[in-house]
Length: 231
Length: 98
Ligand SMILES: NC(=O)c1ccc[n+]([C@@H]2O[C@H](COP(=O)([O-])OP(=O)(O)OC[C@H]3O[C@@H](n4cnc5c(N)ncnc54)[C@H](OP(=O)(O)O)[C@@H]3O)[C@@H](O)[C@H]2O)c1
Image (cartoon, rainbow over all chains, first blue to last red; front, side, top):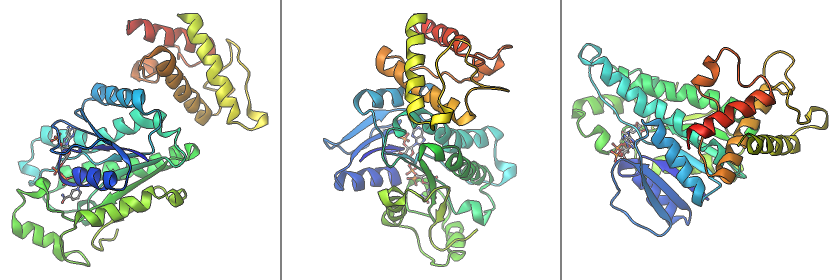
């Protein structure tokens, strides 16, 4: 399969790159900085997903070498945790751009190439912060709630192209993203899970593998949270 | 340039027809109505047509354009009202990229 992963330089994105390379797929990843990883079936493209022109250029560059994209994984994202009164509206806007509008722009940019796949998939990233309505995560949670709407509505609008659109909502996973979140706050989140531990990369991969499976053609508009968080 | 665009639209319509039921197929003409009341295409077919056309433009002309943007919708007369106006609009977009 030919897989495009945004936010491929570190964290979950880089773990996904390595996993799909190991599974013999071909991967193109984008991010602003270069990952510390090289492989003949992996290509890195420098792009800021909050810049629509750069996303278009990225999709165009991919189309030059790969006219068909099977999977688009909108993983790039950022978080910021602060009380509403301590959040600059500009910071909330920045999160909306990097979490929601980036997925919107990438879906739009890659639709032409996805359309030509036998089992086209778009996979988005949300978070357990949405169903848990976590205090102090308004800006992040709202941007990911928008990603959930995008997932459900795109599933309908792209159904006639047979493109499935789903999302995975990881529980806290040890990456840079949560490095600055105080320990007691993370523990409070874990306490609300059915299974009270951090998510591992493999847990996330498991959900994505399921969405990607050619046998999952009829699974679309779904959101799976890890750790036993329910809506 | 306009003739090239018209040819690509013709080709896009042929490709679109391949995906449509017999009674939904459309034939190319300059005044074929694309959107709005009495449009020849359902909205999903219009979206598909635009996707095919963007693809053909990218493949044949090596140009990356987005046909449906805010500008297209802010015009007093929609560039998507007919095949003829679409051809004119897309030609304009392509000339701008030169
Ligand atoms: N870790 C968690 O606990 C957790 C929980 C739930 C959901 N998630 C979601 O999982 C996804 C991955 O998160 P992570 O934990 O792996 O975070 P991370 O370690 O901070 O990595 C984020 C990735 O996104 C890229 N990125 C950020 N802004 C970008 C931009 N403007 N343009 C292009 N790439 C950009 C970064 O690359 P550059 O900086 O090089 O651009 C990096 O590769 C995110 O969507 C996040 O919301 C994470």
